[in-house]
Each structure stands twice: as C-alpha cells, then as structure tokens.
Image (cartoon, rainbow, N blue to C red; front, top):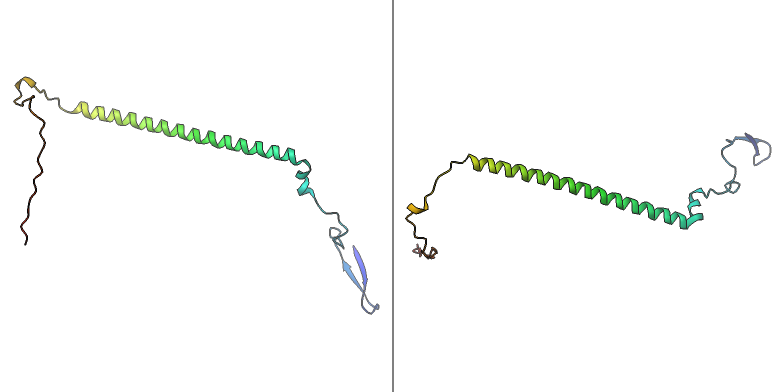
Length: 124
C-alpha cells in the first residue's frame, strides 16, 4: 500500500510503502490476550495442572521402583553366581580326614590367651 505524506514545506510529498501486515498505529490493533486465556477457567486449569503433576510423580515413583527391582535382581544374580563359584572352589579342595580319636590335644584345656609382653628397647 502506498501512502502520500506531505513534507514540511508542503511542496513535496513523500511516498511511503507500508506492508499490509504492519499497522500505522499500535493503538489500532486489539491486544492479543490469547496467552492469558487459561485464566478464564482458572479452577479447571489448576485442577488439570495438579492432576498432571500427580501423574508425573506417580510415573517417577514407578520408574524408581522398576530400577530398584532391576538392581535387586542383578544383586541376587551376582550373589548366586558368587555362591556357586565359592561352592565349586570348596568342592575342588582336597578333603583331609581328621581323626579326633588320635589327636594329642587336650579338649579339657583352658582357652589359650597370649600375654602381652612389653619390650623395652634400650635408649641409643
């Protein structure tokens, strides 16, 4: 769109080219309140937001429980494998027969408690 605007001395006219999308005045357009439309139904909006937050919290709890279950399962598998490995290692050990009847140890003896010996080192 072409607009003719008079100059200061009114002898020349300045021609401005204005796009149709642009407005000549900021006051001609109605303000855009679309981003505030949620306030129209604020209670419903709050209800929906609270429900969304609760669902996110439940999903987070389920995710953490799933990870915890997987971790427990891995630990159980590891412990089972370790136990089997230890059993295999123990079964591979040579078995010695210990005959208690031929033992020279006194089963009625007191428990051995070593005495503390304090060693004095000579001063140099």
